[in-house]
Image (tube, rainbow, N blue to C red; front, side):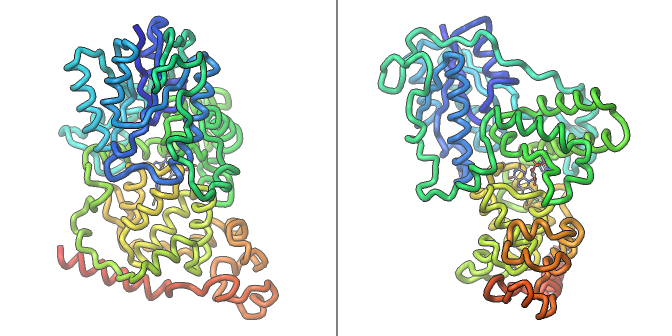
Length: 494
Ligand code: FAD
């Protein structure tokens, strides 16, 4: 009798424990994706994530088809659909890989209980993390609130196991049936993915198509390219937004097209091949610690389910945010029209490609929360809608870090100066020129603060502020002072 492999954010065949277990000893497998966004609670995937999901499902369907397996695609409540599928196919077992968001944990617990109560062999597996959130504990059995001791505790654990290979004996059951009860062809998907309505009605995804290749192959290509060209210099290269110095694996990791164990192994292989010493070792360790930040985010969310919505430090619950009638300030920030080049370049990179460099995420976040004094939840929501790597744990951690209210957060009084940040990390203004072509004619030293450039320089570059590029929305110095004053208020109130 066959086993169901219930697919969620584990859109790959290699290092896939649930698929492995389902296919044990050549048992026929029925891979099924059930579209049920409501089961993510308040955090159903945003538009950019949906675009990614569509293409990643297509890639997975093609990879399964090449092995003679149809991908069953259904829409509806997961538990009811699984029960239906068991009745239709006579499956004896259901396997899936775990998700760690609070709504998912609650839902999956119910699914497991109900299936077990019906006598179905139901198993969940870990495919997404090196260390599941509950396995890392402080000396007194509590959770970690700071990254460094958390990561140290992770590193004391046994090395991650080597990744699993793709099961070689994947087999479809005889006469697998689709939604309408018809026997499905030996390969192919059983319902057109278009029916899930994941793609935008107005096509804004040109920049995403140009930038990404969703799916397991795209993830492996990205990993290979990064290992060869950028890992050795990661320590330096990771700070420069104009340079491809980071892996850009985040959307692949989020959708489970690659596992952290595969990444871990690739790094070890690279070190073994080229020598684990000096800058190369430092860079590799730093890169692995970023994978550690991803694990830390899951750890914090698991122990603080309210983390995406409420400040971890309760003092920030009463922060005096700025009034923003008609969302004028928020809108300018979202559109990349604040008049602060590094902020606008980042927001346009985000809107165009669905991704933004980490350094710039910190800068645009600081500008929103401190210079505009708008709630971090507004930035979190916009990132959720527009990022292809939007991840509940990492996004909440990032925003609460920026706001100073989270776990291991930047202190609130640390306000990024976007001009200094630009001068430091985009010294030749290449990032500004790429995303704000209106400013590309300015000499590099004036690109970060065009309002400070002499009129003749602006004139030579054909830039009229207020026409070709906006005046700054706020004065950076004054708005910084206002933010610090607001912070003093909550400090006193505490
Ligand atoms: P690399 O530098 O190559 O790092 C490798 C991997 O490590 C990444 O793919 C990612 O999975 C993980 N990682 C790196 N930095 C972090 C971090 N600070 N926190 C958690 N994981 C990290 N990351 C997301 O994956 N999803 C989000 O929704 C998200 N929202 C963010 C919001 C804000 C305000 C900030 C400041 C950061 C956010 N990050 C988020 C973290 C980080 O910016 C991205 O993970 C990183 O830019 C992805 O690029 P990369 O794959 O090239 O990273």
